[in-house]
Image (cartoon, rainbow, N blue to C red; front, side, top):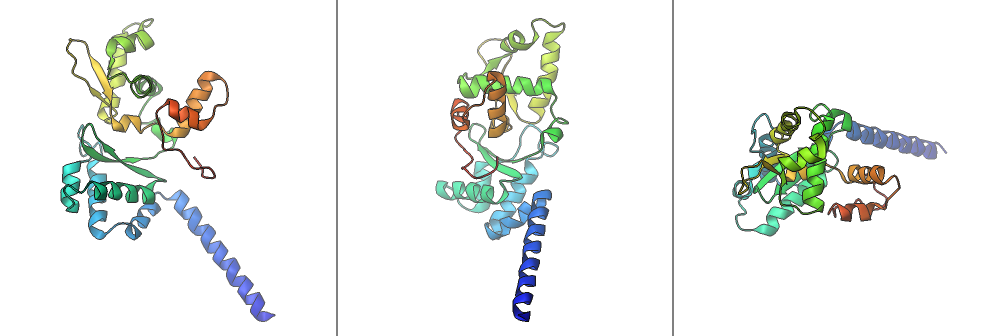
Length: 241
């Protein structure tokens, strides 16, 4: 009986330890980085750290991340596409709760993005900048427009306000600084903007679903919503968003 009692106490202690570890991992983003050592080689871990460092807006303003060529060079996998994408996949498997490693094909840059709560995001973007980004996201990701002009933004947001032009430009500026938008060269003199991979990935799948539901005043099927927004990275059933 004593043996059974002792085993039961040990099991309780193990459960407490597991619960404590889960609580710690969910409250400490850096805990996710510990998992990388079990997935990446020492060389790959160093490359990921270099990408993370170079993805900081304060370090590489306007040129975030590392080029694919540089990543492949550091990993010594030049011309080995399967190994490049394997690296991206394995990193994301380890850090998906707090970070996301993306490859911006248009810019040919590999970038690390951090997931943050909505309250924290408000200190980076105000509601006007967010609205502009969402409008451009819809035009280019859903309607497949190549770019969005300043005149289109004025028609959508500013035609009834004074100094609309300067206000919209002022709200576009922070989007450019964080790499979500970039100017697009058109054949005319009018200003135009194109969303980047950073801008596209700033909206989570759950945010897009809530946005569509709010606009339609009805509950929608998530897969259909994500198809509408041309998003196919569904969260499997049973997992939290």
